[in-house]
Image (cartoon, rainbow, N blue to C red; front, side, top):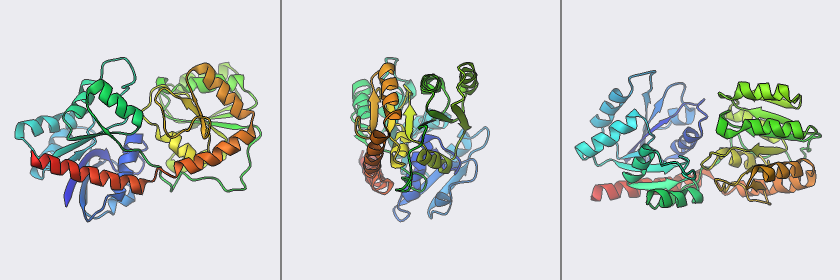
Length: 352
């Protein structure tokens, strides 16, 4: 049995995209083959809490690095999965080098802004450079890892949690006016302000903004200034609530310019929601012209959104195609691929 540690949280209410991915993998890892160690701050996902051969390490408000590293050194894991860029990861990499630990590292690159011209963050570069195996969550990111960090990487897609994200009933009707949904943290690079700008331009549609963040107040002020009575702020939604909102909407709109391979586009597709997003990060969860549109610039983004709002038949056709496309991203299949990668990385490390 291989022991896998990940500095990820098992918390049921943690909706961070990176943690969501790890939780889905953790919940499906074979308990006969893998012992799992991960963190928790609040109530853990019951699928993980009740999983046999699982240990949850309590995360406190401060002072976590030393006690957690002591536990890891007493029982070194076979594998450290998905290192981040925090003090705990710093301590682990330093001690692995100093003590010549046989713990393998599998790094997962999910963004890091590699498509931007700024220098790669040193800790992200370390996670890639010192890993025994590296994977990206899209083909485009895998290409960028090679181009910018000189390291070949495999591809492991994120899947979709079908407990929450599934199509509406076959007899569900399109809305009049059309309902446009945005979901994401309200940070500047997510560009929720663009949603409001489009709402001011396309007043025959209703716009819903799901999420919280430092840009929320600015967005509310902008909506008021533009007289956008067709904009509604939903706040933070649980996965169950977001899935329901997606099934009740007509279009998913994501003008964000900084992403890795956003799971929310896959979640929307699984709910039968055609998407309009930027092509900057080459998302494979949207097939341009078939399940939605990928825009090269803001003018195209606006034009494609307007096209979908005005064409319910196009929306219906894309909705059906999106559901079919989302079916290939099955967490059970993806987890088996991770299990193979874990075993190979451990074997490679032990052979050194």
